[in-house]
Image (cartoon, rainbow, N blue to C red):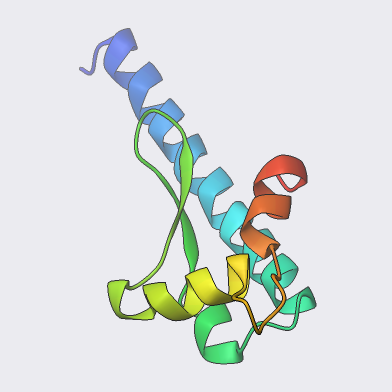
Length: 89
């Protein structure tokens, strides 16, 4: 028989996974509303690493994502991640 503590931790992890899946959907909708390309929108997700939620994405898209988020001298910023982390969670 599983201990009460084990059941408690299992329940917490299950709730974290469920919340994270919902946050991924909200994040993708938010990023899409900023006009980010579909291939980037579909590649991002929210993860929970035990200490909190974080946005994850494939490493090969990092330069494109940073350019979108922070802009360049010639391209205005489209701060979808920052606005989501402030108000989306």
